Length: 440
Image 1: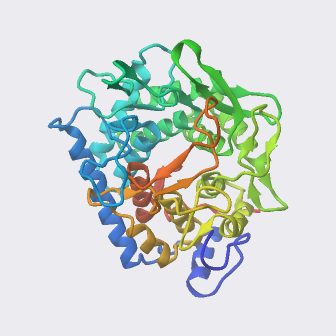
Image 2: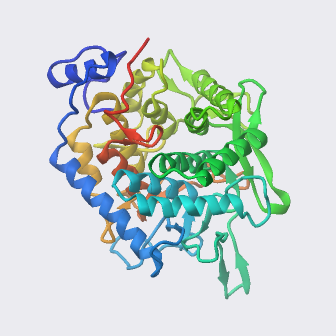
């Protein structure tokens, strides 16, 4: 996925790359590579965009727990489609977890805590289930009544309330990302509530999604309306690396040995998804939870294990070459294998991974990301009118209906900030400070 020579088992490279190799593989206390002008500009502008999003959504509340809308088109922009009612004022948990972590990277701990506090309230006050889950989305805005509200809208033409089945469901990866947010914030501003909510989230994953059928790991979550939710029996490489890193981080407190085992189980699944011959990851399993899905590929499933960098897995860095050959689109990257357009969020994930693995990302990639800035300070999900992922939103989909559109997107903005600031959401520290040796 990089634009230069891919890293293979930390092989030495000339000049600056040799210094970075020594830093990663030998623990030499080298200084980080100098940031380019565009990267520095992105760091400032993406952080400014996140702060503006907080101010926009606060509605005069300066300290109340807060959830940010994932997409915003408050003013019509040429070439940008109008946001449908189903996405208007909807705060997806994954996007908000990223935004909270990115705000920490931007130095705005107070705003990060507001989002974390909202997540805690979501865990503590689910409208139906007291089991520690978190929904995929909530209504955006300050939580003035001390509990989040599930999203939806009134359709006057149909005279009925409309809600979205996916938004009120619980995907395993989103639960893990909520835990990662709380772990990041707890590191900067410790609170027993953050630790307790993290433990509840991880326990929900263990109790509700663990599937010991080979390959042992964690399944996709639960989908549907409250009265008839169904288990999602496929297993995701992306979800399991999220769980592995969140559980391992939580386990370092030493109070929950079961979390250490949970981390080992999830990481072992990710290890089984690594195709050594092709030097890439399978996306996960099919619906039976056992048959490996060997054709499809998701960019995040390829990148996140490299960015997370569990100790002893330096060989995974060879996957950069496969990513570059199969997900590259112009100066950026697309979601699916042989993509039909640039995915801004994934391109920022690629930049973050390149910074973590190689010490720097190509200037052309930073320039591409900078060009996606919208007038409201957020960054477009894609420069194209629409790109496909090849995935379905849920089991009731009639085909691959998960698309990204050219809307200003909180998640894309957060990943750009994380990449430009060099902050690793899986470890809660900057890339250089958190560099691990490559042991093979």
